[in-house]
Image (cartoon, rainbow, N blue to C red):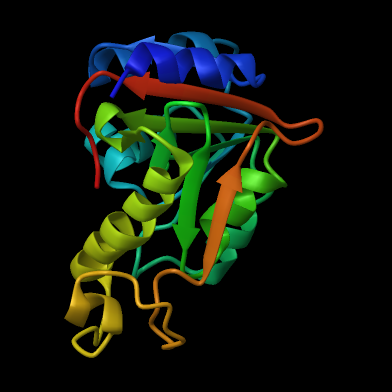
Length: 206
């Protein structure tokens, strides 16, 4: 898949976009450009994300902000998720992005996709090249039939009977432990929403 084509499509839709070659370059961009101004009085929200964990972002932000509210299952308090909704900066990744600029995320509890749509003053997506697929249909397929299942295998509880785990694909079930309760497709930035998307030319996350 083409990183250049994807970044251009996202920029054309009104997102602030940045393409980098390594995760080290991504970290530098976050702290030197996005957070270039003094951020010690700012509140940070961080979604649970393998990509962000590979960057060590949560620990790095603790020395550069007023508070950091992160979602780390199964330990995170629900109040932390609510506080993250009102953060100055909210960091997350994406389950998939199409070459023509659609961002797709699925959520079991809704905290991550809620914050990506409304609440934080700035939203920052960080994603590796492995999240890029050709079309919107491909992005939905990757999200439901790969990413959601792999995350559930790693972090889910009592999952042996979940249809997606049993069959290896989303079965559109209504089980309480279903990881795909809500699916969000971002077509463009929402009104008055400031969004930055950092695309890293490395495979990162699930």
